[in-house]
Image 1 (spheres, rainbow, N blue to C red):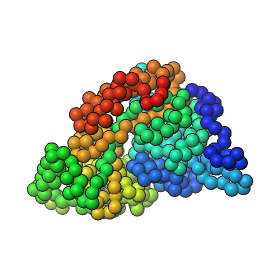
Image 2 (image 1 turned 45 degrees about the vertical axis):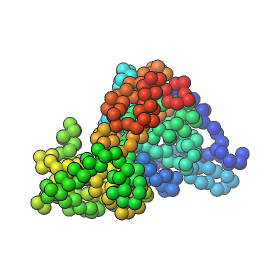
Image 3 (image 1 turned 60 degrees about the horizontal axis):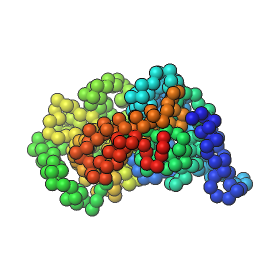
Image 4 (image 1 turned 90 degrees about the horizontal axis):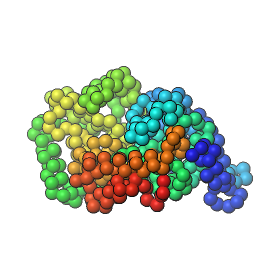
Amino acid sequence: MSAAAVERAMPARARGTDAEVLAVATAPLEQAPAWDHLLGDSGPALYATRAWHLANAPLMGAARTGAVLAHRTRAAAGQLAAVVPVYHYPTGPARALLDPRRLLADAGLPASAWGPITLLGSTAGYETAPICRPGHEADWLRAAAHAAAHAEGTVATVHLDEDVAGRLQTLMPEAPLVLTGARTRLLLAGTSAEDYYAHLPSRKRRLARIEESGLAAAGRRITLTGLSAPMIPTWARLQQLTEAHHGSHAPLAELTEELERYRADLAAAARVFTCWHDNAAIGYHLALRHRSTLAVRAVGLDYARCTSGEYFNLMIRAPLRHAYAHGIDEIDLGLGGTEQKLRRGGRPVWLWSLLLRPPSGWSPAHTRSHNQRHAQLLLAQMGSHLLPYEHARLSALAATGQFPSTDQ
């Protein structure tokens, strides 16, 4: 789909009276007006906040950033309706989970087919929520189409929740919608962690008891603080150990800079759980609160010393008790490690990426084939932990490769 076709596909006038028009303009990202009032309460919405984008923009390695703003205008008045942060990567994003070439590598397209990569709304944290009023995704798509029309190469928005992706696909059925993963969330029932565990199957309750009692028996304790400046070097070192454990080798200075930026820009949202033994920090978890959601952001462990269930106590058990005590009703556990998170009560949300301009040579057959393969992969990874309706959903995708009600 050409950029011009994308822009033509969107209505020139917004919903409402004939006198109300959606006006689109561009601005430097840091000069975009406050927009958080357009967002919901979910984990993906955290990663769409203005503070999150401004904190991470210098860390992303994009050659250029900007924002497309959509205003509903009537006479002299204008109301912000949608914002699309824009990130241009001449050779693609450094982070694999943001790079459409790597997310869709099974398509087998040559590197030249992708060209430069432009991401719309997608940044660190990976999950993406359109910045617009609920139910007004057409406003966001109009702004996104404007961004696509003025970009070269592939243009995409990655890792949209399935319900959001479905609404966007209805508005722009020509744009390929591809399955690119799952995030996991805990939905908190009742009024306490005990109520939550009571609703779990017995084997999951047993696992929770084993992990919590094992931590206590090993003499570990977990504290909760903000992003304290003196602790940042320690947390960065722990995170570096975890990165290395998973095959990444981020420099300590880079991880330290990231935490320092979060302290400067996101201190009010930050909740840091630190696991201690003999007065030494052996693990930490940085979570960020967005309204009624707590989102896992980073976990770091000293693997040589963490042998007593520290990881899931830091990432799930301690945050769960904190959430019940502070009016939080959802914990967003993020991408990756889905099987282990499902074993501890999490539920998956399928994530889809929208190709507003797919790479050269992309066809409906590529969409179907990729979606079939990725659904089969997710089934193999987590099939035994899925609820019947979740299993049926993935099985249908594995069979057809099609998002519901499309013929891509």
